[in-house]
Image 1 (cartoon, rainbow, N blue to C red):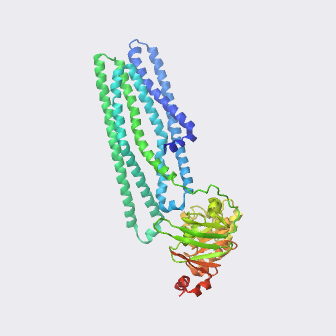
Image 2 (cartoon, rainbow, N blue to C red):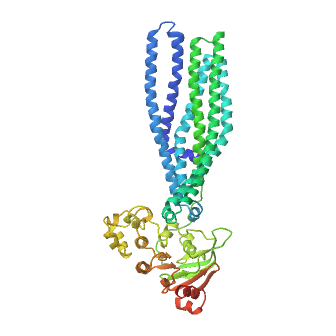
Image 3 (cartoon, rainbow, N blue to C red):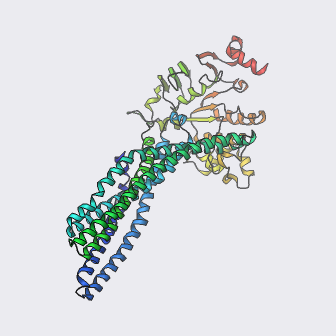
Length: 569
């Protein structure tokens, strides 16, 4: 995990190196002041060397001007470095998400994933900038102060620095407790985000059923859990800060007491005593930075742990010798295919099915029989438990995922449209297409005339998930995508089941046009839409039960006959 964290410093290594150099120079400037003060008190004032006083004051002024420049670089460029690292992490995690299999998104909430990408990485960027810098400054200041104080009075320096091991022991003792507390807050804020995202997405359902109280109850439950977790984190933080502050306050008493005794006994002079007091101020600064570092480290590293967990999720991979498939005819063969989402329930078992290129095959049967799952296995959205699927006689595992999915088009019942314009949502079918090709695809999908009736035409903003469009309009835009993609294999997954009869007829005309010359697999509950299929396959939880044309299956008087009569009795 630490190795991955360090990896993100490489693109900003120059800025990081200069940042650390500036931090070192700022620390060096701070170390000069007590020494100059000591010399002024002990030497220049008693000897009335005013020219040297003026000289060193000018030098001190120059150092402070340089310190301003160094601090500006640290604050501006250091934070910019942290933001760049955060942006690179966010880019990597987003790219990683694109390669994760469907099963990951089946098992994880959108709001929780969003929280990992946005919230968790905010603290990581602060750690990336301030962490090494604060640690480095603290070490330089502490070591420098100890060396200089040792040259002034070694026994007194040892007494002063005896508090450091106590502070380190105290910090280490609370480290694990703080880590667990901050990690818990990360998890709980993810749940709050998930509830919030889900509630906002379903706000129309909530209003329709007057479910405000229940939505508030669900949100407040997770919000209260987060509040409790955050309070626990602050409790540990309070223990850490108050304990470390007490040790530092005690250090002041120790310096004043021991230094006073040493001065009284004549072991040090007034200038040395003053230098000790000033260096203790310098000494307390790195200790405070160390305290801040420990707190920042726990907060940042807990966020990076969750980032690292997500980055370690196994991605979809091509087989070692996978090839790009260019031309596909569309022959599909299922050979003893079995699949289950978990070990407790098998969805598909020993499925054998041959689909010839250009054929239209309809999959029907009761819900839960695995019709949609069978379709999702063709583009390898899920991996087979056993068996094989062949396209044009070649195992789909031997194709690269990109080239395989390029040859498969899917029109689903639940159409997803991206926030943006109509043009944006059609061209995602093929980003290399021209404007003319987009318009041609819209015409083929019978949506062009509607688009042109809008004030902004193809540049019309459709709202989140296409909320400003009707179901039929959204469906036709999704069909236009497939026309633009122009794949040889087409999957229609209950593409018209959520539409009214008039709209269904219009959409069906577009789908019939879309299916021409393609291998088409239709998942349908409305059996009226698949009467003319080349073959109808009846699938239940026991596998394929019947196969044949519409009239043949009716004559058999089996499952299909019962399903058909239940719709048209």
